[in-house]
Each structure stands twice: as C-alpha cells, then as structure tokens.
Image (cartoon, rainbow, N blue to C red; front, top):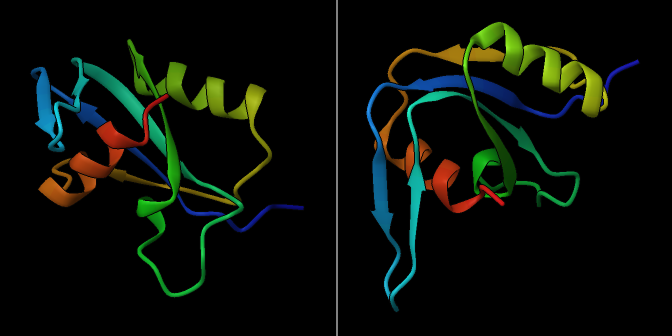
Length: 96
C-alpha cells in the first residue's frame, strides 16, 4: 500500500543560495536530494509548496535508500534532471 504522495529526486551540481527576504536565506549544497509531499498539503496547491526536502546525498541510490528506510512508500517518484527555479526555491525553503 502506498501513500499516494508526490515525490521527486533531483541533483544539484553547484551550490545554490536563495533569498526569501527579511534576512532569510537557504542553501542547497551539491548532491542528490528528494522532496516528499507532506500529508498536510492542501488540495489545489502545487504539491512542492508543502513538502519536505531531504539531502544532500552522494548518489541517487543513497537518496532512494534513505526514502525507503525512513518514509512510508509514496507509490512512485520522478527524477528531475533540470528542475525549475520555482521547484528549487521551494526545495531550499522546505529543507529542515
């Protein structure tokens, strides 16, 4: 049985820092990440606006192993080779 939550894997080749205003900055370091939709995500919003980002990991396989050992089965995922700027901004903001 799966949760049906959205999940995406993506790779960052060079460090990216995003400015969210009011002195808030978040950074994604090089490596593999995955972003998993939160169960609290409201219907009708872009799923990655209410998600949690995990990583960086050295390889895609390590990231998938982490997902499999720490999260409920989302029921599948996609891999973004060139994620959009909006996706990356959300990923950085949603990283604990």
